[in-house]
Amino acid sequence: MLAVALLVGPPQQAGATSQPATSHGYDAFEARWPSGNINSGNDPHRDAMRLALAKKAGQFEPSLTASITFSAGVVGASSDWKDYVLTTQRASARNSASQFQAAHNRPSDVRAQQRPRASDNAATTQPKTELIDFATAPFPFEGVIPGTDRPFLNVVNGDQKGHRTSRGSVMWEDQTFNDSRVLLHIPKGFDINRPAVMVVFFHGHGANLTRDVLQRQNVPEQISLSGMNAVLVAPQFAVNAADSSPGRFWLPGGFARFVGEAGKKLAQLYGHPVTASQFANTPVIIVAYSGGYLPAAWSIRNGGLGKRLRGVVLLDGLYGQIDDFAKWIKKSPSVFFVSAYTHSTRRQNLELAQVLDENKVPYSTDIEGHLWRGGVALLSTSSNTRHRDFVTQAWTDNPIADILAKLN
Image 1: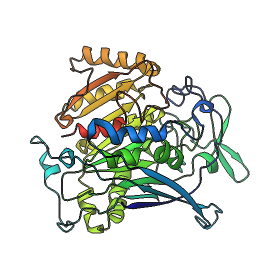
Image 2: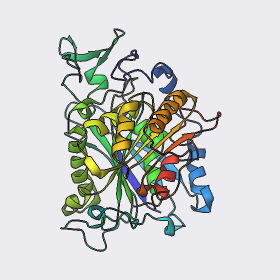
Image 3: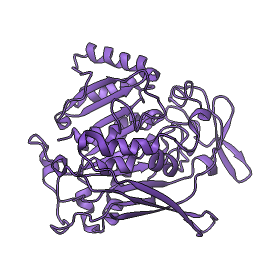
Image 4: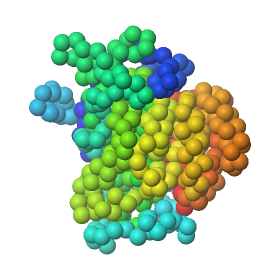
């Protein structure tokens, strides 16, 4: 079995309290899920969920162990953080036939990868996971809030800058809006010379990449265990805070610039920098959990990615921006859109269904295979499904892996 080493900084402390709902969707989520309810540390169901995916449908042979060790080190010139080294061991997928294949109706720009390309034996022999600074990351952000003339950082206290919410609380930039790191993951067996997909994951409130996206929600592991030819890109938004601000993704073309940089960084992590042009043509899927809905809405509204964005998946995340999602669905019949929900977002999903009916856009209440052909699915989950667990347990265990499996 092969080990994956991830060097990261430690969890950062929460910077502020919640704020009320506004026209920009800051707290439509917070009203039901205040930060104090979602900012706890360990999830007792995490290991069980990991094994559940391994056992699902008999496709995987569970042999999953993980350990975290600490080594002294300094991250950055002005930091006294320690390095976290995560070592993960896993068995290979038994059912290799489930790996991602190109559909006959795949657009030609996806089938035809641009040169230069990696060698024909460029498949990764071990998974690669790393936190990397991005110049185009959502934060830090010093612009104005769209539709207003107000700067996002509207509080100054000496050398500190912060964002004052509508309720009067302040989230300080150095604690909440200053992490430009992005979690990248390339699974074992990934081959850029084959049809591939880039999954961009937007975490919800009260989260950081290490504790939540990597360890609790197991997003990189879901990518690996899906057996699909996919890579993961997960930017950090507000750190440990009840805030959905998109930051630089508010800007026209901001998401496209971010994805462009992701392609270059993935090529470097892949070990073949010349493949940056191939990653630059890889189709993109946005998966947004909970409060991540607002960056997702702005990414499709004016993100500038165009037809390269092939799908959007909301994991109990339709707290607002219904018109943005409905317009994108209507004008792009070849894309797919999946919104799965608990009681938390049931009303908004019913509203979206009504909008789709009015515009004669068909939708399903189940996810069908061959998602590349396009389609809309609105999925109600069991009354026992918990919002906090939704990234690992929704309509099925490990829903991100399930979505990828339906791309065939």
